[in-house]
Length: 350
Image (cartoon, rainbow, N blue to C red; front, side):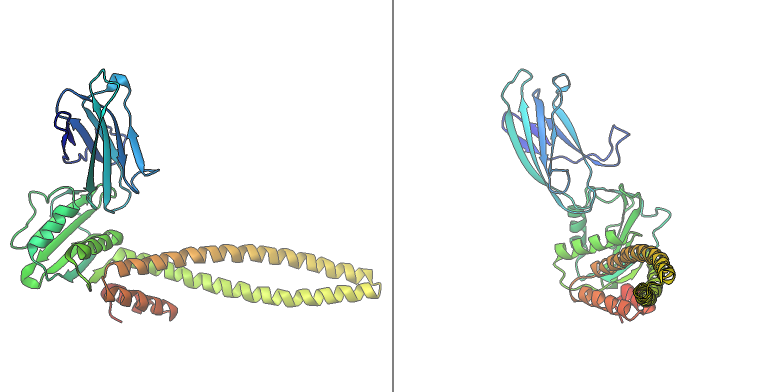
């Protein structure tokens, strides 16, 4: 931001991705600069979800006051953020300061920088769909959603081919569109969450109500297949432990009756023997309960991962196709139809 203390005008300028502090993780720098010899005493930035406590204050010591303050921003998620900034500006000897205020949106995909469209290794995950929109509309969405324009080797006419690199994960994102092929658009990324965020952002910007896609995420599918295999094993262990617990319950009843009968006839030897067996059996039941409890917690974690995968698959669609995919996936899980599940997640077809 540039502030002029005379006419109280301000201009937002591009945030800088490269920090002079190498120990910091990749981030955006919000630079606040005055256009004359005034100094900035303090900067307050309000942004929901960006800071702990929703605000951040920069208050340099008197020995380091200048006309520039840089505020590092660390977006943890690809969500649009509204920055509300208050800046205290005055002379070096001032005891009272002018307060300038400005509000600007932080682009949703601000932690992505342009890279070569020929970047290697190329992502193996893809999402393909058709957009009945003009190419200029897609370019406008890119300008609105990303901090920087596409790189020098990007193609923007008559087709579109752009590439960005995530500073958060160091993974590439490539996007292509060919209006000559019914607006065929392809996203290349190995991050299923990112693909879903891109599609939801596009749908909102372009006003798309229903969108069907074909999604290919081999890594995610292999991980999901492994988790589903673990779910089956946990279910088998749970059934076995439940059956053992039922059997032990019957044995406990018999031992209690036997011990009580021995007590009634003053047969202390058999009574002690029955209670010793009860004691040992009780230890086995407690051990079995701990195993069953751990198994249950691990099963819940796996089911949580499965549910997240279904939600990710739904997020790749918009409107009715989204609801159809989520419903179909849950039905396939209920019927233990793994291949049907993968087919629905891929193409939305049952």
